[in-house]
Amino acid sequence: MSLTKNNILPIRYPKKEIDLNIFKSLFDKLPKYPGKESTIKEIGPVWEQCFRNWTLSTTDVFQCIENKNFQGLKEIYENYYINGTSEGASSGRALTEEGNGIEYKLNKSKRNIERAYTLSNYLGLGSNIDEIYNTLFNTINIPTTPNYGQSWGWWNGDNFIHFELIDYIYFLHHISQILDEYNLTKTCFLGDGSGLLSSLVYENHKIISSTHIDLSHFLIKQYLNNHEKSYIKYHFAEEFNPETIHDTQILINQDSFPEMSNESVEKYVKNIKYNNVPFILSYNKEVTFEGGNPHSDFKSTFLKYGYESIFKTDTIMRPGYIIELFHLK
Image (cartoon, rainbow, N blue to C red; front, side, top):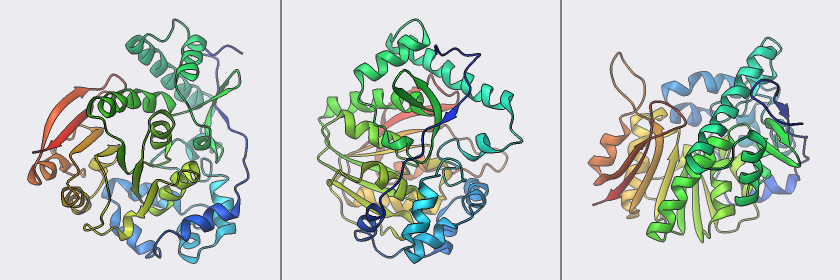
């Protein structure tokens, strides 16, 4: 079937079984999860509704993490995109709910297909949607593991198109230019959510070491995507120590810094300064502070710790969002 903006409804990726040993291997590498209250303390005000969604599943993900209930985690992550666990990182529960009908789903599809045309105009990928996606899958290594958990998207031939794929490929384009220009091979992903961005980077660049820091339930999804890559280290955001040592050349953050508390931003920026990380790459909403805006003033914290902006561009995908590269003076 040929994709068009007007006829394609999103469908779910087939359910994939997860080996219980994958959960065990992650928890063997991590310190003890400090409990749900630590997650509540870590999240910023804009995440409070998401937190309520995360705990709506029949099995509480945070209780499973705390108790190392691998069978419960298996059930949750095999249904990650439909049970609320992906909320705040990837489209999921809203597309599953019966109250959101065909028109809602079509509007979501139209937005994402329009983004594909926007990306095509930017990179010269093709003149119709099938050609655009065929070009992407022929020129970029696009992993399938982020789809596990029954992600929403579409089939285009043998290729499944994850709902958020186009925006992440757009950011991957900028990341690739920076990694190549500065010869960077050691990354840190802070707040990578469902892990599609990091998976794209790993599949398309020679990364020799990487660090992941995120809320516990997102960190598990990132591990499920990339568990075969031995060069990655994982840290729960809830227990992260600002003096944690890691070998990093660039910290990458998308859709995360503005949504943290100012205290959390300070903790992470203090850590990357402590480790002399030379670059921060941010793809985030340009935040104003009128009318009691709950978002963090993360750029002021960057400046406080000696990072200066050396590149900044408006994004073509989302109005009001900025891609900006900071360098340690």
